[in-house]
Length: 454
Image 1 (cartoon, rainbow, N blue to C red):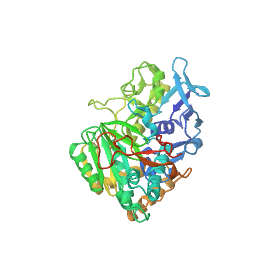
Image 2 (image 1 turned 45 degrees about the horizontal axis):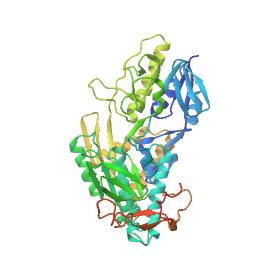
Image 3 (image 1 turned 120 degrees about the vertical axis):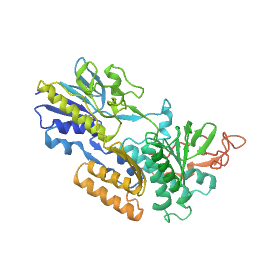
């Protein structure tokens, strides 16, 4: 039987595998993780609403019973001439290849920022952000210096796309509602949630009336929204916007994505984000046995707009690529991909969201939030996940509680942190009300203190 290899167990890869599972092919799926992850809900793990197991499912449990071989490995490249997938510890031969390795964080050439401002693409990322957020409150509870305590209670989110908006709204609810009354020495409501966007508005891909509604809702939740602000540096102590410095112990990156580096091994033209310009049939130009789908594919619709990097689009592409492989096996011509846009939503907080259904029906408030909830529940894998998520959402909605407020890893040492001025005059850049002299967190040796061990 022809051997079909699928790289990536995300939305596109999983849907392609499910579509091909009953066909007369030998099917292998390769992923560096052993689970399929429902990425749109990662921020709920990062903000302690859901546990990782509620938004992830083992790939072997999903595909093994259907006869799909699952390989846990790192893909380093593709040799299209030799029809080989190159692994960090071996290789796989293929007859047809579906590449669905997705995207990773992009720091626009400032990769050193990753240590101080983690992004949100994996369970590990979400657990790490949750740890940093919860530890900030714990450290602030013990800190006696008011300036250092203020820096610990500053939370900066960079990027006001859907992920950034969802993170900001959820962090605001944690400080204003979920943690209220849990501490004796601090008031979590004093936390400052700052959302920074380089463009002129939040949710830039949405119409102006929806972005205005989203901004007003965020501000009502207590989020400080700063648009048209360009971040120039991030370090252990906080964020620089030009010469202005914002002291913050917790910084979250939601500003950019870059395509998987696997694309570079194909030797074909890529777009600015590193995605492959695919044919309408979703193949690599000139290589009809290699398909690229999901966040790694760059494709324009008939009206000239790009197919969005959303879960529904990835699932449709994965299914279509599988269908075209079956057509080729039957000796039939492949057909172009057409994206059916069912809509997109961004949740802002408890009972608040904005969205567009079927490209024309704008929704806001509780109606949009209900549509968002329903859609996400329907996409979740398995009845158990749907039930668990629904119960946790119901609990969170009724009580403002966060059921997954667990801190893992070693406990931080408060004696490793102290507050000093970073220059002789006690100022760094333009003085701002949140920095009180742009103070920095440093170790007892006087050097910049690294983040707590994670």
